[in-house]
Length: 387
Ligand code: NAD
Ligand code: IPM
Ligand code: MN
Image (cartoon, rainbow, N blue to C red):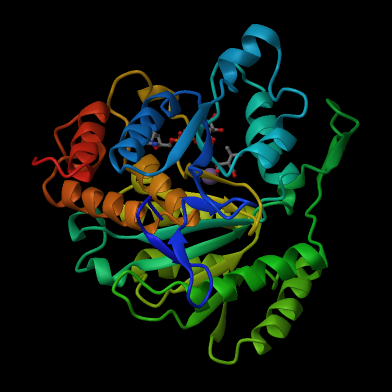
């Protein structure tokens, strides 16, 4: 909502939402700007996030941006990955977090990425990793005869448990009897809340063409991993009963992957565990034109949530002005939508669509432009300047 928009306050009293009524009953102007933490991170994160910011600014969204230097360079300089109180501060003081990517060949252990990125997901309890899979234009899809209307599904990935907890250990390291154990943690609470999130998402979020979503498919490997799979199966059936209007479906993850690359038309909302969700969303990014096009949100309803493109820091192409900024720009739109700035989000998505149709894109999706030039084109379009 922007200054000048009207929000219902009570039956007969309406005031613009950016104004509040003081105790004395007079109107005082309080800007309700959303505060956004920006962590561009490493590699191409440093290139695509500035473009996403330009586009946010061009949209006129009422936001205040605060940049943080967490990442490989900071870690190499002073050994700090996340400053003390860092996550609690983000949760307390910011409305959302926009992240680029973490991962740098100068830090072969990847420790900083683990502590910052996975730390944020786990410690801020951002349990639903929502990764929309949308084909903006048929030319972007490697499949024959597939149109944008055929690819509009979303993967809801569990984001706080599974093998990502990194619980385990190594015994007799370096000997021929070495044993490495990597535990797969699945809690009743964690499984239930992400499955419920997927059903709620299905109920509340129509497809791009306005039609209702109607199916939630759980994707697992319960034929082989029976303990965790059994819990997911039982909870899925229980939660599904609460949503009689939604059709519950199931596929094993291997068969799911095959189906996704042969014909993704049947998919609507997918819910799965952390690791399967990671793998299938890179594969799904392939349907959209590659990793440079895919957006995501790490969400805990009611808490400060984090938004990041699905791609990583792509060190091999970093610093060359060739990284595709669309994933980051669409992520920014997703974040604005989450913050209630739906008009700005829609304008950004519309401009990205125009850019794709007019080939104002980077080389990975067949265009002639660089990272900055794509960002500038989209920003101008969003600002309503002719291009
Ligand atoms: P990656 O996503 O960085 O790159 C995979 C491939 O996609 C590469 O060929 C790369 O050039 C290409 N690519 C990715 N984003 C692109 C873009 N915007 N435009 C054009 N091409 C793009 O994955 P990776 O190579 O497996 O990992 C590199 C580093 O990034 C590693 O350190 C990894 O741990 C890290 N990583 C971080 C995140 C994150 O922070 N969210 C996500 C994935 C990987
Ligand atoms: C992603 C990334 C991360 C993940 C890595 C960098 C730990 O691949 O966001 O998809 O596996 O979740
Ligand atoms: Mn991944």
